Image (cartoon, rainbow over all chains, first blue to last red; front, side):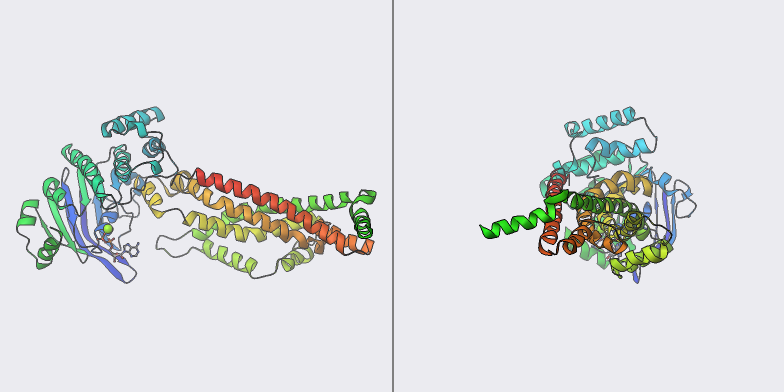
Length: 240
Length: 232
Ligand SMILES: Nc1ncnc2c1ncn2[C@@H]1O[C@H](COP(=O)(O)OP(=O)(O)O)[C@@H](O)[C@H]1O
Ligand SMILES: [Mg+2]
């Protein structure tokens, strides 16, 4: 579904991604862990071209999206993204946050979009928040709405960049529960996180990123039971 | 009692006799006309220039448009507005005899440079995450600007824009240089007609002050309301 070929990214002299290649299949849940500053976010943001790679290619659904001729806006409709800081649109109600993109893309009529949004909100138990503004929501609620906003586009893959890192501890659970449910429904997911429990339980593969490369990749069981590189051993000893 | 009488004489001569207050009112009318026209033009120019200035190429380098915008802002900020006015009146728009028009255009172009900075700062103050979320949903840059960034930037822009208008009202006091009879000019002429410097000048200052005070209070109210409706 997503194929990454020898991806490099430099910010001026800072060589952040140093040759990342990876193949993500439909239905997989790829969990990415690694020390801060290792390039996890940059890698994730290269997948939907929020960052433009310096070199290398990203293929999505058989299309080279790093080709400048690709209509990236069209591609992004099929790739949801959830941010560490939620990034709900502050000037719009929850309902409008969810329906803006589907309506502007003419994927649905306004009524259909609202109906879809309400159904998704009901599933989250947040339907009474439809007319509220983001500022009145708790962090956990915001992040669940952000997930709903992406899901309203019926994406083929969902990218998560530390979705629980900005949350108070008591709210982490509700967001992880939604993500688990999403995983069980068969969604293809790429998740950057520090939640090792989630990686173990939900991941089909766990990647260790360090110094701009995928240093190690394994099934969750092997990843945690038999880390190979000294760097990963050291990392795990710190976070577990 | 003597001095009260004398003060009254001066006030009477400067403002009341022969309905002279009407001259000041007319002058204030000219002042406001130029200020409002300049403000409108300044907002149009400033908005365009702000977008020129924030435009970047794919590789992150500034565009030619943004260079032009910078040069314009530099020139306006680096020269006295009196000179800008004289240059427009005697050189650039020499053939135009309409002083109000020339003054409005001059101050519009002048104000545009400051408005550009206000608009630019207002847009840049909107969290980058808002744009990223919009783009990640497949919205175009223009759609993201229009539906998400600008509505939020507007709240940042409105208060300093009001301030800019107040500055404009005071700045236009130099339009006497191109023989416009604005409030300042009227009061100045009155001093030589009456051999009384004090009363007309102080009177004009009071009028400016009251107008600006009222605008400042309205602006503060607006600001409070914006803050209250702030959904961040
Ligand atoms: N927009 C940017 N401009 C310049 N440097 C950046 C930018 N984004 C990230 N970096 C740098 O890239 C490196 C990796 O960042 P990031 O991908 O966010 O790491 P991680 O998500 O693993 O913590 C860091 O050194 C960071 O400073
Ligand atoms: Mg990160």
